[in-house]
Length: 235
Image 1 (cartoon, rainbow, N blue to C red):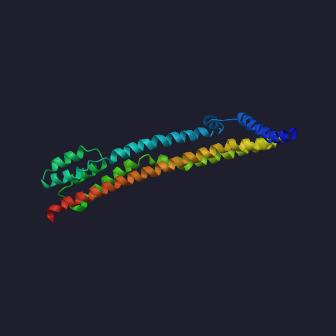
Image 2 (cartoon, rainbow, N blue to C red):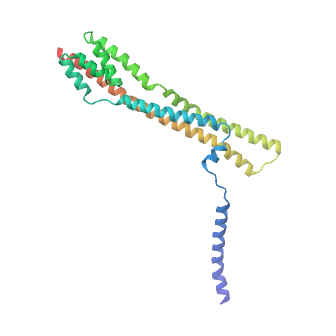
């Protein structure tokens, strides 16, 4: 009977000991928050942080500007058409001047050129359109710069860290797996940070370009519609 209880008790005690060992290992495992981890990245984390701030600031600055430029009253061109057909060009120009978006400014330039050849009107509106596109694309180069150089800064930090690690090993003669793993872990933080910042900059840059393309399509459609309005009475 005692032999039976010893056989049954042994697996139970082993399971209890395993749970206690797991709890002890979990309790003694060092934890590190995000800020502490980033702090181990070294001095190159400073320019990476500046690149992140620039990317976030110019993304939202351009996003607000592009959203503002893309807003236009759906009846805008209908009102312009009615005023042009009725010969009230001054009212059409007043509406275009009081509408703060690229489409209205381009239409206003076309209204100013009424009476001249269609080619001259199209050329004037095209020039205004190019200027408006340039205004929308302004500062987008900052985002392209961020997604271009942020990963390079990250890799540079890793290279400097590895050089420092091997120099310390050569100088001290210590060559332990813990020392190697700790050095590599610390310096890989810059690579991960650089890649993440570069990815955010790349996504933001392409998203804003897509929004600009939508606004450009509206401008082209409005320009074509305005030319049709000018040619309508002669058909």
